[in-house]
Figure 1: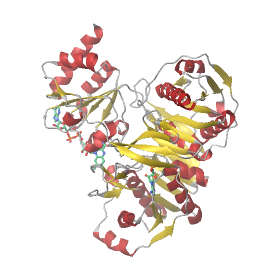
Figure 2: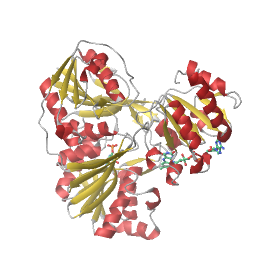
Figure 3: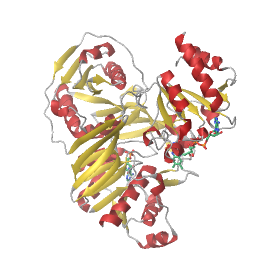
Figure 4: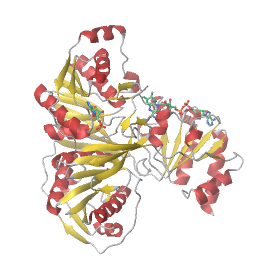
Length: 248
Length: 318
Ligand SMILES: Cc1cc2nc3c(=O)[nH]c(=O)nc-3n(C[C@H](O)[C@H](O)[C@H](O)COP(=O)(O)OP(=O)(O)OC[C@H]3O[C@@H](n4cnc5c(N)ncnc54)[C@H](O)[C@@H]3O)c2cc1C
Ligand SMILES: Nc1ncnc2c1ncn2[C@@H]1O[C@H](COP(=O)(O)O)[C@@H](O)[C@H]1O
């Protein structure tokens, strides 16, 4: 089985978000970039397929040269090889179109992507990729087993879970549950050394057009100070929630 | 030309987000000078939607669409869009809406803006405000394609009544091969889900252990709320994973969010910031949550919460 894991290179979850150039650009100054948390779950699940079922694992990113350390980290965790598609990921549809080229040309059976990226939170790339390649698609996936070309998966639904049956080739939008937090892998020294020698191929973009573009960014309006209510005066809290906030 | 809204239902009943997307569709149609057409699939009573401005409803009734299937639903939406000559399609941001919308976008070759929080600020160029960076910011995004798909963030635009005399028309759509089959659905019944809840009562590691969640559930029951928890609480197995909220868990966009014994780490806040009113109960006045909250009580949850339950019961009874 040939697995492709889509890796989005995103600001660390604790990053302060600021903008420059008249709020038209995200300020990358001092921001630490990491593998998107959902993609990390997917990468670990891919490693299990590799170890238990003899799959090969390729990681891919659509981005500029600055994302290569993130791909190297994925190689250090255990992926076999990496592809960087050289394009600015300005729009989810564009990213999906570029990824679709790699998927079609690479003969992949299973594509694991995160259900959402922590930067633009598009929640669109996996679904679009599935449609463009005509692969089956499971989103919000919390469990997956593959036997031959048969797939059993579970996805999260509002208030529960749904068990699904499908077949390869398949695109998955994965999240926690596909593996657990404790299963996530941190690259060790040996992995980091080996990653340096693993192939990282840069492919030129096919030149897909963006269908959306961001004009400006805004920050949420600053919030007023919290109103503290004395623990012995909870009637006041109820009063405020009822009369002022009108939420109870 | 028209604006097409997909109003989703479960077991024949509209989700609350259905009324919000219809309200939103009505607004966008007004801005564009077009009509709003609403698509429903196996809804029991589609005429309910006229109250929110749906001039025309296309009602699909088809047993092979009994359970949600993204690919099949997407082809139905596409056929409805073609029939109505719709260039703007609006979908909610429920788990199913988020599954569906990207497939619709590809089939219509449409630019897709997800997590939209307001009516377009301009229709030419077509510009919408979206959440970005896990609720830490917004982007003003232009959709430049002729066809457009909008995913409306929950509880952002609100439900607005504007009764119209509308029509309901049966719509026969061809159903595509599914590719993915539903084998089993487990759903907790009789409990408010985080996705649907107006109020969410959430608790963190400050509660010390799973045996102490009785009061959290009781508070939730008094308020008709859903229960939620911080990430460590679900990682420790004190509460089910489905309750984990935050940046890497479920998003919360309720009217009221009550956080008990939760410190307010940036990753937690990122997932619940979209809630309108936040209340924190914490022993530590320095807990970061107090900076993000609207109302706060500095105190021990084991004393405050039982008292609050009693007072709320009295308030509800009055
Ligand atoms: C990549 C990444 C992603 C993450 N994603 C998420 C996420 O999605 N959601 C999430 O929640 N976290 C997430 N986290 C974890 C987050 O950083 C915090 O560790 C977590 O939110 C803390 O949970 P907590 O507030 O329950 O526990 P703690 O930080 O331990 O806080 C407990 C609080 O309870 C208070 N307390 C103690 N006793 C009492 C009492 N008797 N009465 C009242 N208050 C009391 C304490 O003062 C303290 O403020 C993520 C972390 C990382 C690195
Ligand atoms: N630039 C990118 N390169 C590779 N994969 C990506 C990129 N952007 C998004 N993805 C994948 O698509 C998933 C969902 O992203 P999004 O649709 O942007 O929220 C991510 O978790 C990644 O797996």
